[in-house]
Amino acid sequence: MKIKNGEVWRDTDGNVLHAHGGHILFYGGLYYWYGEDRRDDCYVSCYSSPDLVNWTFRNHVLRVGSPVEPTRVRSDLRLKNDNGRKVNLERPKVLYNERSGKFVMWMHYENGSDYRCAAAAVAECDTPDGDFVYHGSFNPFGEMSRDCTLFLDGDRAYFFSASRDNADMHMYLLQEDWLNVERLAGRFWPGEYREAPALVKKDGLYWFFSSFCTGWAPNQCRYAVSPRLEDGFGMLRDTGDETTYRSQPAFILTVNGSETVSYIYVGDRWDAGNYFNSRYVWYPLEFPGDGSVRMVECDELDIDAATGRISW
Figure 1 (cartoon, rainbow, N blue to C red):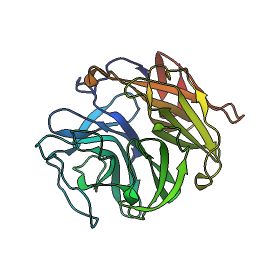
Figure 2 (cartoon, rainbow, N blue to C red; figure 1 turned 30 degrees about the vertical axis):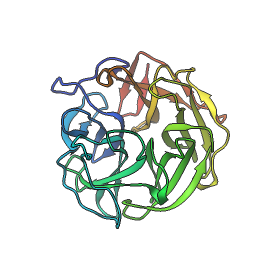
Figure 3 (cartoon, one colour; figure 1 turned 90 degrees about the vertical axis):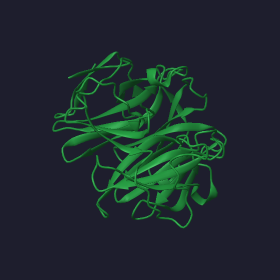
């Protein structure tokens, strides 16, 4: 079944799909796509699909009126700012914690007026598409935290976020319930100004993708490889073209099928003048086996989620 890159994507009810900067979680035989929803009083919406092509709207899982519950001694629990306007909750990522039986969401938080807060925010839920409980925002170990992602490595979960005004990329090991950071486990590419982190594990290696900081304008995606997360990464290398085919990384989708495993770069094609005109692009990733990765530009992508096979 085919998807068409750069076009307006709609859910099964015919409504525009709102899931930018998001993440896809496979659970219970379905793919759940979480992403930014900036309409009205919404923050994060959730869609589900059995085939990665047909997406059914499930819920506005986080919104201005979501239930709030503190889990830390100090955190900002407000879902509106002092002026009564919405705050910014960006790049939501969700993982399922088998220990706690909870779906845990981490995000980038700003106060809705400027980008000086540079904080992380956390929410959780008993179900993948239920009403998430908001646990507030904070600065991990007092550090700035902007563009972010979550990554599950065995039974360990890590939170990556751009810090020091985006100059550095930080990696935090999370506590067992994934609601707080345990320790700063890595500080990568100091002074390189990387954002939009996306991570995948393949053949025992960790592949880290990110963009440079150019605001809403697209730039060159770069990647680095590591045999062990906490040992750090090697040199940054280019993939895609100088604008990453006019996109920025959101996450890397792994399609585990009955015949093969495929990897897809999921990116946002931002419209700086009209956020709601931003589009999605899904590009296949090829790993030749020589330590490199190739991003394949295509107008259409044919996905067989059952077998894991993709073509373009």
